[in-house]
Length: 188
Length: 84
Image (cartoon, rainbow over all chains, first blue to last red; front, side, top):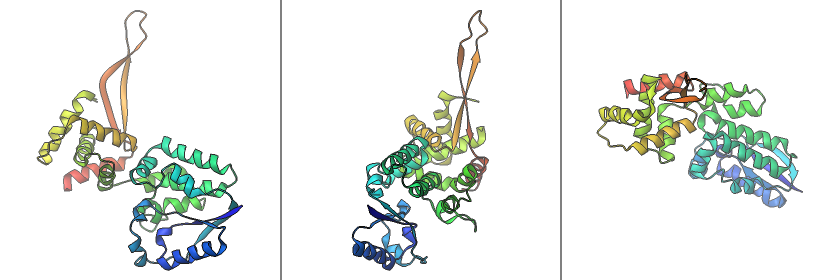
């Protein structure tokens, strides 16, 4: 049984902490590290050095023989546009969660909990950091201080600019989206 | 309520007033699907029951209503148009 270490908010770690986690993994050899990070940070590792550092957090160390990363790879969770589709589609999110549950065979309630929060809240800055001093959706969800739909609505709400950014990422015409939003604001 | 088939034309007219941009009907319909899939707007469709003798089938109206799922989207869209 291989211990799995989940590194929560990996994008908040600097390179030294990532190295420390990796070293820990190498020394133990049998440990698998799973880094959870919003996809927006995946290709911006140079930012790790300038991020304010929070203590490295190993949120869970579990015994198991499941490589969550490979599960996620198999459902394309972290792959750019697919991830956005995953987060906007309830069916897709449910499919991914079901697949994770199926592949982890109900042994890892905490992993399911982490990823259900992650899927529900999304990887946006709102979800991770919160808004105006309030905790983000993910933290609320993980701590059990989560008021379901309300928390998602509070943190998942997007401004027009954010909606247009999402549209652009999905190859939709932002001007068409903007026109529709304006149109519905007059005819809603 | 608005006739669904007229939405692309009406939106195109609105966009042309904002910027000199040519947009196809397909791009608008694609964007509309994106807004629906994102849970930002919901589509309300009207049906009516026929009054014909023995005819209880639901008749589809050509009109639909799109509403924002959260009033903040409505306010946000309005303010964005006014101040952008």
